[in-house]
Length: 153
Image (cartoon, rainbow, N blue to C red; front, side, top):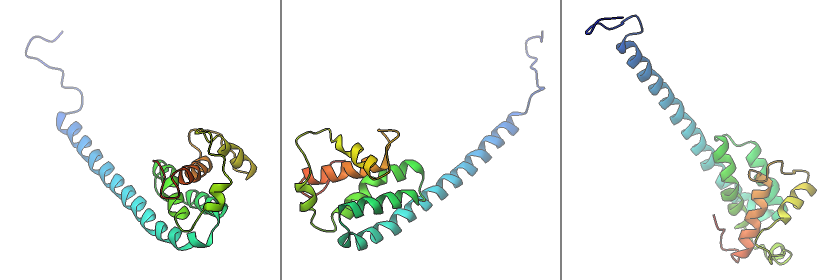
């Protein structure tokens, strides 16, 4: 047992440990900034493209376009998943959707019809809480409930 005032110095030095932590922080900071710029650039480039094609698409065409956007999304996964509502709203705002809205049953606020629609189109939801197809149709539901002025986020 070491006597008072003696310490075991057989481990790595404090200078080495601090240096490793600083280097890791710098590397991770650079990687995080790079991912952020890639994500931001992808959204900045894709939203004007969605706005351009939106007037030519019916509502199902918007869903197809948004699901394709989600598949090729270059941002990190949580941003891509949350971006579905934003991109779908851009597409829906491209033209009048009264024909779609009049055909929806808006009597229930649960919008469980979205899962049936996803299954019919061949993109069933394996996880109901995280499903781009369901998010796209929920956006349609919200868009129609808010008289085509926007969606509740």
